[in-house]
Amino acid sequence: RAIDVLSTQLAEDPGNANVLYNLACAECRGGRLEAALKHLGEAVELERRFRRNAQGDPDLAAIRDDPRFPPAEG
View (spheres, rainbow, N blue to C red):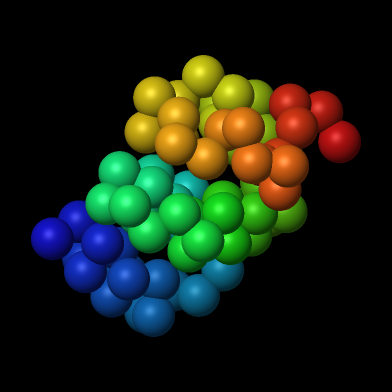
């Protein structure tokens, strides 16, 4: 359900970093790992603070070891 709600919000407000980050979290928890990596990458490009947030966010644990996961600094 969260993925549906956040996807709708993103369609209404494309480029919203907060929505992108939360969508990545929901997708990761829902097993949609490729989509989660894509949306997380977009979120950190828009808002650098999400680089730090992502490092310890338990919702993103399933993708943290992926080489595409954004580093804390960059």
